[in-house]
Structure formats: structure tokens, C-alpha cells
Image 1 (tube, rainbow, N blue to C red):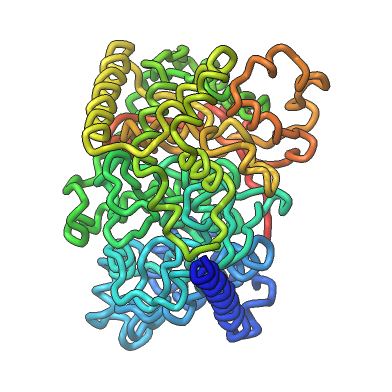
Image 2: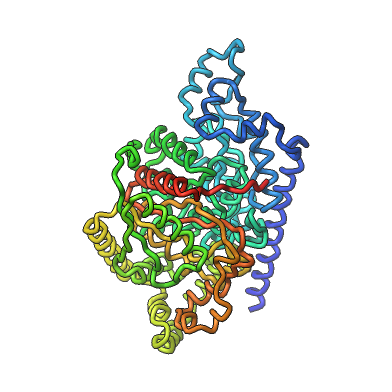
Length: 586
């Protein structure tokens, strides 16, 4: 007992030391930056920063804009974003320009502009594009912390294939971004880096686990964030931060060399989900990345070239299915209004919009939760050092899993008359045997087949939902909102469908307010414990001005079609005079 306590104390001391070391290292990186990075953008830098991704590449290839000037503009924005939101784990400004594409770079018209290196740069489809990387992706010579002090001062020897691809494509990989400890969560906070806050309101969350990337892109510090997603880890931050994101299907985007707290999980796979500050940039990035033939870099990639889809030129009206409620947590008024704005705009422009009632979503989610936590949460619980502070929603879920099964059965019996969904979760959330896991995979595939059949029978082009039932929640309330409230995004990971998020509007404290007596109303009392927890943190007054998004889903490997669907949504919103206009944050 004494020895165990001693080891726990020792690990806690080491954890604190490692966290302090990493924060000092980051501060040293900031202190070493030239003073110019702390100055406002010059007029010329403002012009560079305003360029689209496609235009930036063109100007950089022609020599009209130099990589060092691009980095100067985006470096300033990155440093401002860090000071506002605490979103960066590593500054890599000097290293960002040390790639072959920038060797002997000169402006147009100088003596070596026609040299072999300059000609080679014409083959770099992302030349000069500033791209940030989630702190789960390996970059040679840097830690991949996952927000855990155990991984501090452990620089990796090899970059992930996606990083090598980006560098070969001429991208400026200039920063790594924050994640919550052990990843799974809806707030971005860790002992290692502290809390990352929402750039629209520092009292609120950026989402998780790609929270740092969401904040950085929203602040204009990066054109593209390389994010990952297993249950909304990129789409929820996109929704919370007012940016664009697209989760692909398994195998469409390079993922080897990306670390998680659930290594080896195959039944619900983690996938890449790039985020961007505009839909045009998101589309250009996807096309240009795929043009690099990622399957030649990463064995996990499917050799599928970019497919041209143009729904608007076809001129046909599309059929959209809408899921208004996942049966677990009804969207709060602000999020429901955002979805309604899109539905009304589509209908006004002649598209067919119908309510979609797929196979029971609550069962789909229950199967998914069991697969992700089939080990009883042990892998995530033990991912850090003893005493490491897991993010509260994950800690609460692991705590539930750790309860003796007979205790959960008693709790389930007690809750079943009033809360059958929560009771069903209590009954099944326990460590699974190999045979039980295989049975769950069989059921998952049966559900996928049922979805495919229903979607085909109804002849849908897309399905629309909210990305999450809440806007960006107040800091420290994630445990009450719980991981189980993320069903709208997690659903499409279980199905392996492509899903994108785009911003629509902002919370309005007058329009989106709950009735004053809502918490004592029969509707609230009839809610399950998950919905009650989510609604308990909803406050339209405090959330006023925060972004609101919508989620659009297509089927497997339909990344091109979903992007086109997002373009249709933006077009109808513009036609109805309801285009989303991001606020200038830093």
C-alpha cells in the first residue's frame, strides 16, 4: 500500500514536471520568434491573407508572392490566435520553409526562375498553403502528445505519410494544434497545455478533439487543419467555431502515422477530416491532395482519383432527408433554427425536403458505443500517467464503465420505467468478450445494410442533421453535456458515411431562448438523463453570437458529392439573403 502510494505520488510529480516542461518549451518557441510576428499585418500581408487557397498557389508559383511573406502573414495570425485561445502545441515556422519546394526560391524574373527546382515547383499543387496539424499526427522531431504528459519530450523519428505528402506538395506546415487529454471529449483541455477557448467567446468551448485546429482556422491562422474524427472530433469544433469541415470514409484520406488513445480499434475507425475557413478552400484542398495520389504514400488509402460531380450544372432539384431528432437528445432551439434555415432555403429554391426516418438511431448509437468502449475504457484510462486529468466527459464515461455490472443492472432496473434509453445503456456498457465484439460487428453491418436499403428506397441525395444539439457550450460544462449527446455526428462514423459541416448563422438570445419555466415543464421531465444534461447547460443569453452549423451526409466514399451538396446549400442560402459571414476575430 505504501509502495503503491509512493509510485502514484512519483508519477504525479513527474506529470506536473512534464506539463511544465512542455509549456516552457512552447513559451520558448514564442519568445524566440522575431518581434515582427507580434506586429499587426501590413497592407501587403492583409492582401496575401485574403487570397483563396487556389489563388495563393497561383501567386506563389508565379513568384508574385514569396513563401516567407505568406508565413509572415499567417505566422502573425497564428500567434494572435494562440494569445486569444491557447490553441497551439508547437510553432514550426522556421522548419516550415525547409522543404525541397522552397529550395533556392526566387521571385519571378530573377536569374534562376527557370531552373529545374522552379520547374519542379509547378508540380506542387499546394505550394505556399499554410497547413496546421492536429497533435495526433506524427511530425519528425516533434512530440505527438495527445494532450498527455507521458508523451512529452518524446520526439517521433518519422513523419506521417500525410505530412510527407503535404511537404512534397509544397505546403507550409507551420503549427501543431491542441487536443484534450486522451482525445475523446467535447472540450479541449489538458494538464499539458491548459484549456483552449472559443475565439468568438472565451468563456465557451471550441469542441474536441480537434479544438485547437478549429480555433486556429477560425482566427485565420491556417488555411487548412489536418484533423481526425471518430465521433465528431472535427465536425463539432467546425460547428462550434463557425468553419467548414469534411469527414471522409475510411481509406479516402491518409491516416497511417496518426496516433490515438484507441490504437487498434477497427470496428468504428478514426478517419481524417480536414477543416477550412471557406468551402472553396476545403474543396480545393481535397482535390489537390487527392491529385498527389495519397495511396502511393499511405498503404491505408484507397486508390480512388477525384471524381467530378457538378449538381448545380446538372440543374436537377435534389432530394434531402432531414433527421430532426436522433431519439436521444432533441436539438436545442438555436441548433434547430439553424437546421430550419437550411431546410426552408432549400424548399424555397425548389428542392424536395422530406423527413427521414431511418432504422432506429438509438440502437445504432448503442451498438457504436459498445464497440468503441468494448475494452471497458481501459485503453483510454491507462493512456496517460497515473493521476493525469482526463477530460471530464471521458472520465465520466470511464467511471460508468468501471462500475460493477450488478450495480449497473440495478441502476438500469430503477431507471427503466422513466428512462428506457439510459437503462439500455447501463445494461450493455461493460467490457466485451471477443465473441461479443464480433456479434456487435455483425449487428453494425446489419444496421448499415438497413440504412442503405432505406436511403435507396427513398431515393435520397443527402441527409441533413444538426452537428450537435448544443452550440459551443460554456467552459467546464462538458461532463453535464456528456459524450452521449454527440450522437448526431457519431452516427455517421458508425455508418462510415461521408459527412460535412458548414456554418449557417449565430445564436440569438431573443429568438433562441427557452421558456422561463422549461426546466419544470413536462417536456423536460420526460427527457432522458442525457438530454436533461445537455439542456441543463443551454443558455441562449450566454451563447449569444456563437456560430451555428448544419451537417450534411452522403454515403460511403461520396466526398466529392457531399462537397457539391454543401455548395448547393450555400447557393440557396445566398439566394434567400442568408449567407453566413464569419466575423473577423484576430
